[in-house]
Image 1: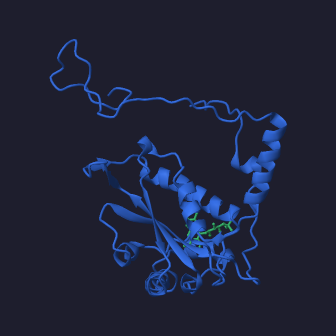
Image 2: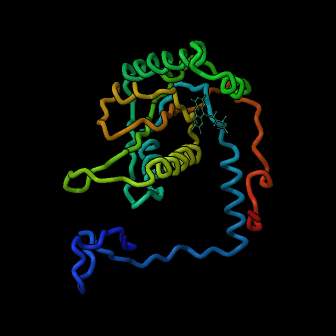
Amino acid sequence: MSASGAEPTAGGERGKLPQMSSAEYKPVPYRPERVGHEDSIARGRAFFDSMDGRRSVRFFSDDPVPREVIELAIKTASTAPSGAHRQPWTFVVISDPEVKKQIRIAAEDEERKSYEGGRMPADWIEALAPLGTDWRKSYLETVPYIVVQFEQITGFDDEGAPQKNYYVRESNGIASGLFIAALHQMGLSTLTHTPSPMGFLSKILGRPKNERPFVLYPIGYATADATVPDIARKPLERVSVWDPKPSKD
Ligand SMILES: Cc1cc2nc3c(=O)[nH]c(=O)nc-3n(C[C@H](O)[C@H](O)[C@H](O)COP(=O)(O)O)c2cc1C
């Protein structure tokens, strides 16, 4: 296969170029801002300090959130790099109290089976113990917005023909991180929630077969008396290796 991803023409006629995809390569100039070292570090520190203050929240107020905040978070998520630039995600926004209620009922039903119905293995329950979570998800009705990120297993081209997507999970993971970071920058709180299995979300939200639920985000402001688990983040030395040597075998 060529670098462009196009297969050579069937029959292999000599002297003919491989069949190219219809989309042309049309580069445009790109001149990112060149930042001095001191400024780089100062900006990096400020961003790290801000992101280090982010926590997953499970206690939300019902204070209203501007619609534009949600739009900006989705637009930021959509700046994520993605395999073959397919942007294989759909962010579904829910503000209707009736739909939030349906989601809460279905999520709690699944979570009850996981936590108390023996569906979750003992080691998982043990891993979750320090987080103090259980099957109750009342915040799903309290928050002004729920957003569900769906991954598009396959997509559609501009003419509506089915199209293959690439690195769908990885692309959605990166978009998710940017979405969460954007919300935090705007002073909003959220939770990366995965009430497994999440098939009920496709049904309640009427999503097509090519989409699969990826993460559910309750979004709002933390209550004044919100608490979070007392957990620490691994230090740099435990999450990075610099200039490693090749392995001997
Ligand atoms: C993929 C993923 C799924 C998660 N699912 C849940 C969930 O279903 N319920 C929940 O309460 N927290 C969930 N979390 C949140 C984690 O428990 C939380 O991120 C972790 O404890 C670290 O806390 P922090 O986000 O406050 O730094 C999930 C996080 C990730 C990344």
